[in-house]
Image (tube, rainbow, N blue to C red):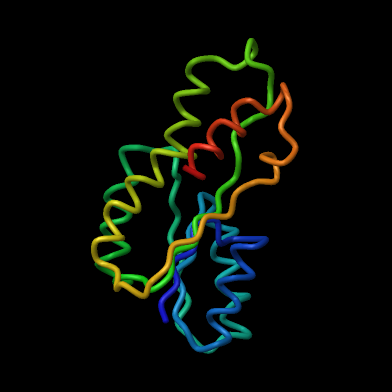
Length: 157
């Protein structure tokens, strides 16, 4: 089993990567903070059996995202499971969120995942899986949560 974990430096992502490794699977964890990733990879290696790799990726950086996914496919191979587990955009009322924030957050939270999956899914086996971890913001929607709610609902679709 090969697991590719976005948002794998802490929390649920790190826990999933640890579980895969403990069961003998190989994992590649990704996030934007290299120091946290290296530390998480070291922690996972201590208790795991599989190979543990890490790659610094910023889902909000259009220019580097596609080459980074190509490197993952080349260096790690095609994953059997992909977990997409990223942070959310800022809270704020509609009138306080700039167009630039909408644009950046739409790429980081939604469009980046489309680019990733368009590159990976065609190569995956039919029994492989993709899982999104969304936010509880969908259950607790409110005026200050318009940006995260909008983008998480787009991922649900």
